[in-house]
Image 1 (cartoon, rainbow, N blue to C red):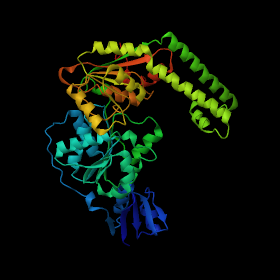
Image 2: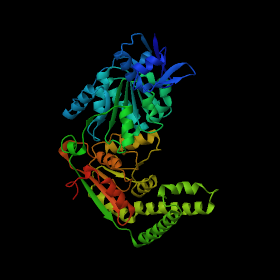
Image 3: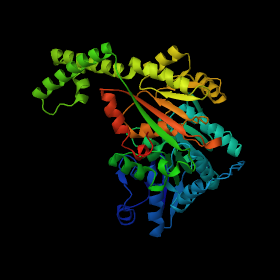
Image 4: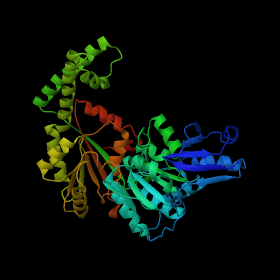
Length: 472
């Protein structure tokens, strides 16, 4: 019996194997019979397990017909950097842990340095997958600096596939059916973006033997975490911000400052709150299981129940206006002016909760704002200007929450955001790179009193990085 295994559209086609062989030998590999071609088929990610099953059971006549580009290549090492003790520990954990798994390290501790070291050690074709285009170009520059190789780019209108390539999650999921078997190693940066219905195809459709996932924050949802472990591998190394502070990261403090709404803002906020509360109360009388998330579905059902849809639309508008008052309270603007004066001569990052707020602050203080839809040239201009000190302040909504390398910034101001602890950790990590002089890093969290913003702040602060002793 000759078993032939080929890569096809992100799957493995197993030809020449009897049902008896599959049932006896390939336990744990989710092979299904495809009667269109009279072959067995499974997602390409199961390639290593399938190979082990066939080898352990001494199935000798097995032919793998994968792309030769997925084999070994020579990767030069032009680095001059020496890995720190914690980075060496992360490398060793991956190397001894089967070379498939997750490395969790805080922002600023050098996850990219660890990954490049592992890429050089692997000496095989590599695909690096990142969440946004800024990171794609950043990885491209770092790979060229470390290896001298001009890596391929797949995304942002570019499709240049090379033995070492960088792509975005969305582009990887789209193109993996055609290029999946061309890489022996796959690196998922900010790997918490991977476990979704669409993006997870980037891992499912790859037969890569080596799989590395990098992140500062693992998913808290058990199902997403389970899927992440299945797609990439177990957690092999984990380092916390608390453990790194004062060592590989700067010491830091988190200061929470509450501001009051003025009389007009408070009055308007109460009126809008009554509108939302009244709507929710009425809906729960009609449907006890009603939750606020259902309001958007009700708003869209204008043909079925136009009166209820109109009420839902009014409530949604009131809810959004409440958020605007929370985020744009005049007290925040006055406090921001004070903080700019306090940190005059220093570089400061300001995080907002919306693009509209970022644009408003940009116009008010005449400083650049970086948004997700900014063109490549504009982003590079703002980041380079901020790094050089030409711009003392950079305002962003979510685009700087993770991944993008920034200079030694020791002050960040959070004016709005989600209740996500992950976002809080990522934003804190923007100011924790340890530079010269061991300066203390400070994160200001500004909230509007007597609003839901206080509750969102409490949710963010449940993480250990906001432990006692880090706040005044």
